[in-house]
Image (cartoon, rainbow, N blue to C red; front, side, top):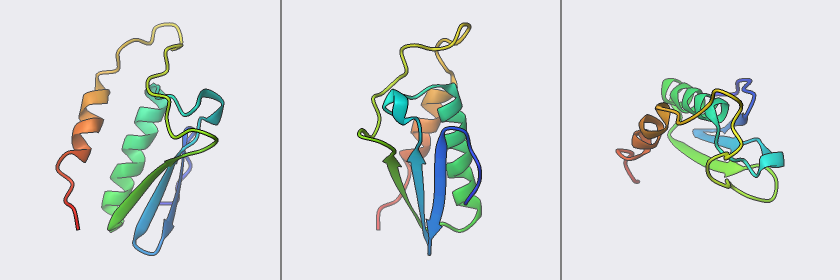
Length: 93
């Protein structure tokens, strides 16, 4: 699970993976790059046998929500709903 991403940090402690949103200068606001990195990190954790995930944020806030200052040409990201739906069927211990 320990891989390099531009907007998230990952680590693994035993069977537990930790994904840290890493855009503290923007209060970890969600943009396309963060969605792509988060999706890839979650997929990597599914592949390596991680049994639990902790999602946290760097800096003073977990996540401010959507980044309202997208780059030119960025608009609604179709992958948003897919990523959120991935968390819906997760079981609880």
